[in-house]
Length: 507
Image 1 (cartoon, rainbow, N blue to C red):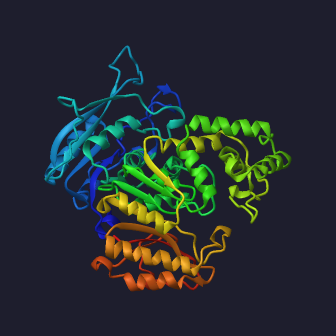
Image 2 (image 1 turned 90 degrees about the vertical axis):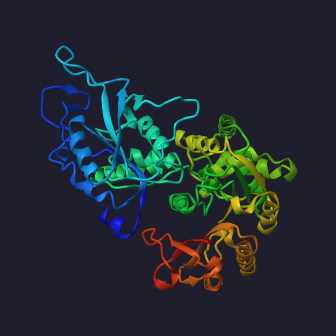
Image 3 (image 1 turned 120 degrees about the vertical axis):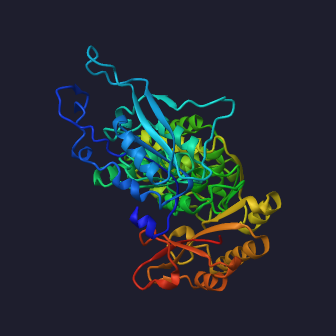
């Protein structure tokens, strides 16, 4: 919180679950632990010290929701009232499967409580349509089995209900006691930004993994796909006011799959074979896709390593078929089981990637399922155009103020094979288009690219940034994704030793 204050970071809400100080030794045993002894972290915690820091990082009207033992609520609420917060309610999480303890001598504790307070100002309270009033109560089971990563983890239904009720899409939520990362994970799922802090390295790693595992993965590992930087891209993409998302160089299409804030998606790739695969994945039922691939896998015995012989037969069959009649299901299977899952055709238009070492596992099937599922409720337009023609088409179709373009072109100065056809002339054509989009059409765009790679420097891009840093009376926003994901200005850094991949945006 001290770092956030120094960086002038203000949050829209604080939702958190600090230690309760309820741990103690007893003889009551339940699954996975003795009694309610959670460990040293749940002893002698100062319930009010941290509260003295929240006022300076919370926006006016911001909500604070704090889970705690009911015996601590008086102390907490008194401290917050002294700071000028308004106490609104005590929210009850009623557990549908409470833990029985000494049922013959006391009540079964079936609830946990969260205090809801607001900083003076216009606060958020989203009552669902058709509901006359909301009780301060949420009925839910507890986190169990593989979904439980922390001894005091809150149920996802409880957290998601609170987030939807007390925040808006695009809000920034802070959790200073992150634990399993459930509040951050639910914030991400519901299109909110988040900051989580966790002092225990074990649970910090758990949180990071849970969030990374929740990201949409590409159905196939197309070279240059942006999965590894999806988190950073999401953090710089607008959530509010965007009707149309335009993915100009879609590649594996993982960015379109991950972005959930638009109502309509325009997807393009200049590679005709890649376009066919994307179109097939986006417009086919996920169960059908896996079943169709599985038939080909079984027919050509690709389910057991090594499968070079079967893969060669499939490739030969595909290449002998006339181009017009080639089966996209076979092409996708060749890509999935090919070396590095690349797409490459020779001058005779024959697929010429050798066999790889992919195994047809539940993990691979799940990747395809989740990727395809991400498009089930999206209104999509998929095209195979030159990038400039595609942009012109979209501009003629959309309201420019509600549209954002994402560009991930081949990188001019890197050595990947798919970049060979990208020339300085193509780079110049793209940069001229970006300048036109800003000055003439006044639309938002984001560009992924590199300034430096293996000692080479993209002088065209660097000159473009220098020339246009005053667009819209503001400097172009440059995010350096190599150096701890920190915002940076390229003029302030030395590039002599490090590659520099960036995200550039005009807003």
